Length: 113
Figure 1 (tube, rainbow, N blue to C red):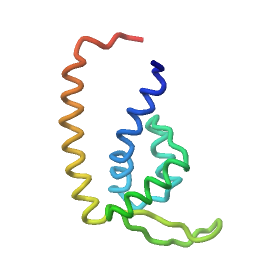
Figure 2: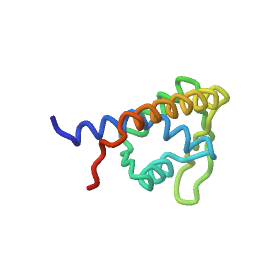
Figure 3: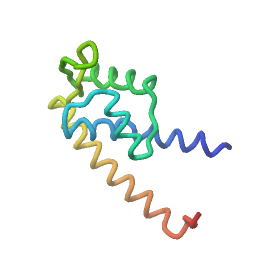
Figure 4: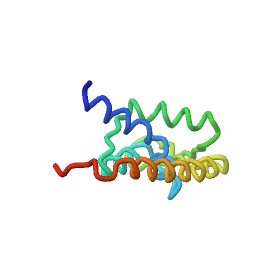
């Protein structure tokens, strides 16, 4: 079993939560979301980001506004809808419970690298 595949699956599993959390702070342009994720060591490419944003928008969790750009055509900035805020709140609670449970089971098993 390859560790890199498993690590990638873990990252994909939390990506939706992270994207919603980033957008909850302020409207965001997709490349800004990607940059913020990179800052946190969550590397995401546009080919992953755009379909995910579309899926979240189609689910009613995101909306968007077009804004003029000084360097080209207007850009689509995403924001959370009221449903998206509720979804994020519930997802955040579920994450806290899950991460607490995982951390509890991992006590004394992680070795220093």
